[in-house]
Figure 1 (cartoon, rainbow, N blue to C red):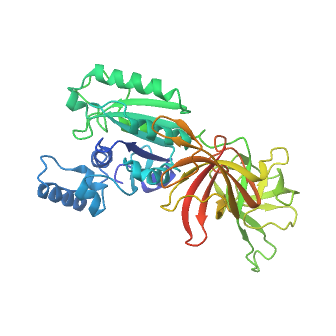
Figure 2: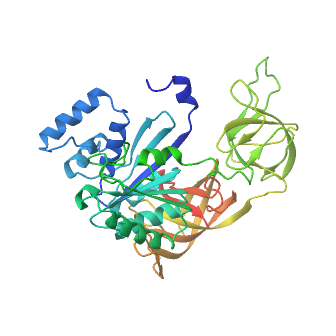
Length: 424
């Protein structure tokens, strides 16, 4: 915090990114190195990691211990749960989601990647592009993560070879053409020794495209949100009923897309009533406009029956209003998906119930092939399914808007989240 003022810290842009890669590719070590070299570790944390490293007989400080917090993770040397870590540089704030590499923890990776602006995919320089690399890249593509950084790790074990790096870059570029990833960057690193993580490596003078930290600081995320299609799911109706705000009625929520300004005509879904925005309120101020992902309160010129789960849109730009949805689903529960089974669905701020009508196909995430005729969707499976809801949902394709195109499926008996869906 000494590098920048508290006020500057609060005003800095936030980047969320996730890490993915095969087991032992060094994800946790990389994050530990980022935290260590960015001076984002407290002294007592570092001392605890040093002591644990000595007990384990390691030659170096095992920075992976900074993120592998579960006892089972430390004993096995793997990541099991999603670990979130926070740090900041003078240019930007970061939230890291360290996700598992094992195939049985695909659901954990989906959880960590669902809100990410960027994904770091680690590749072991000795192994090159593997099936798990393809699987993680497919999930990043499925979740529409707009920025992918391929970190070729353990370059110290291949003598910092430019030829090895170039081959991996070529192989991954060819594979990524099968996916829908808007931007891919490549960085050769050694997380263990810190090469090109925070500080520029003297061992790879042939590389001059910036360290991982510089790449992360330079990612432009302003255009990652949909600023074309105005969407405002109502989360809460504010009625103070006080002397100062006797007649105040505001609709609080988070803008899911587009731009709203005072004077704009809006349409209320599902009632299809029209009104005009009279003001946009923040905590103590008024805003001239609101855009994703701002949290604001809108007031309208007309008294309309609006409640949580309704959505404000522009009259000339309406989302799909439907009870029948085709979604790509990642199943996250040990109990398989039940065709004709009934589940609860949460979409933006709206809650409905649904029935699963059909499993169209499953996806083999290792080779991207469709598996036709297999309707058993179990833990960590990804499949295209059709559902019908009890009430209409107001959706956009996930490819178009990650907020209005996503939903979660809940087992009503246990109240557990059992699946996440992306509207096709």
